[in-house]
Length: 336
Image 1 (cartoon, rainbow, N blue to C red):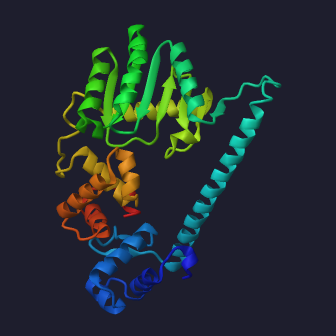
Image 2 (cartoon, rainbow, N blue to C red; image 1 turned 30 degrees about the horizontal axis):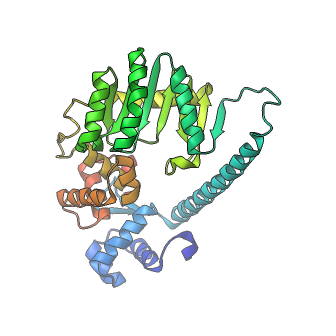
Image 3 (cartoon, rainbow, N blue to C red; image 1 turned 180 degrees about the vertical axis):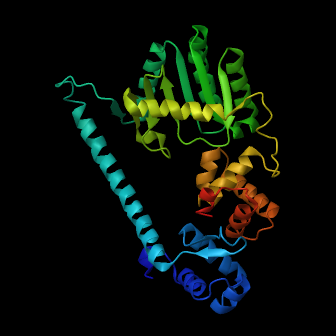
């Protein structure tokens, strides 16, 4: 297969060998390909990322190799998705430019749009201040950045105290990782003492603020908050965002609950279980680190500990072992 499909020469060799010798043990595949065991497992990891091999559901302990006619379609679909993402970013850039121009000639039609785009951090912060000054009943927030800076926490305190002082219900979801940062824990406890509600989860999908269930602010790019934000007011999108918050809130752990650090029947903490799930889906260390609010170095350490627990010498083998033990679901194992 051509490299334009995203498959390197050594990876293709392993894939062809697996197809030609179904059911063979990995040591035999290594012999047939002439690859060292470490290199073979790296190639299997790559095939797993491409969804061309996965643990067999019908024959536990063995690999299922996806047939070429299906595999090529999967590779093409992945490339098509990458192109679609690039096109979407281009469209977003065009939209931002058009919005900037429109700001100088707006209000000619008096239309009431459900979605507005804010172009920079200053505009986002100004809008959030305005929303918080007008809030009457409730503020719901996802705060996915882990430990907060002292400057940000001190700057937020006057506004938080003012809202809670006039009876506004505040619910904030942080990452479990904040429990390891005393200043952030102290700030969260301060919020709770004033009546705010704080819970934590292993990972959060995006930064989000919802005010009075009437307006939501979400980033355009979850990886870059400076890229702008969408302000959603009314409609099905807002209803879905409120539903997302409630579903995550229900399964989150209260700040005074110790369950976030307790180990389940697999011997895993909630954060370790989340890292395993994200690894199985093919996320990189950097992506996982951002999702759970820790450093990439910490993520690599957790991954290494998980491999040791699973008696695995590669991430691919860890994913296979986790699937066979029932530690991850079939959906998680698709990318394992």
